[in-house]
Image (cartoon, rainbow, N blue to C red; front, side, top):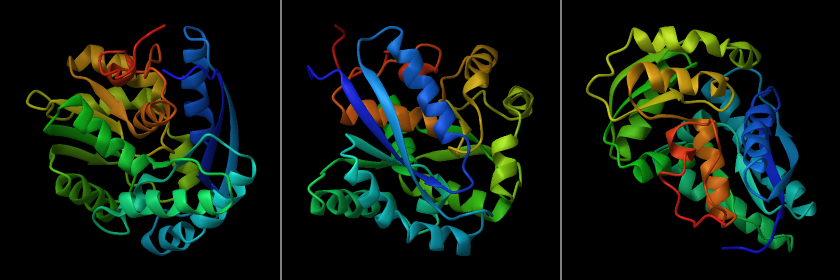
Length: 258
């Protein structure tokens, strides 16, 4: 267990993303109420307005610059905030992205681990020991199918899914999370091991997690929750956040409490 108590969180953010800088800090502020560590948040942005493959690829090309900029601030961990941008680059791309961007920070004498929301979600499902999931995504159907294919290539079965077909990334951030429980209620979740309530860091979902877990009796995870879990893991901290669902409940913590 680390004895350090102050951490700088770096965030590589699509320029139109308005949620990563609210939900992840919100979770870590909740954690500050029950644990001694304190966090500050520092962002670098990549241009992206519409969620399509061309804009996603162009945006991903800017991630190296963002990692270098954040390493100037000597952040302790970096989170890459766009799940679909990583998954649109091909199977397993989160591994090469994380490796490349981590090397970029080291080249600037500011070495820090880099996680992606895509890799964090895949790893979270492994930590939870699930096989079959139901998934909600804000993307158009073709990109949602790409995300499903990526996840299934990692060894999971997506047995039911919903694509909300919101092309404008700003509108994704404006989606009302109170609508999510009704969306999930129309899905087949009896035979799944977990529900991915938001396969996108930009689509707000934190406020709906507890309600969906209570209604379905299933553990609920989101891209933002998984990213927070991965950040805490990289920092050597107990992966606990009150009110953020099963993954951060302490049931899957690999660190000992104080």
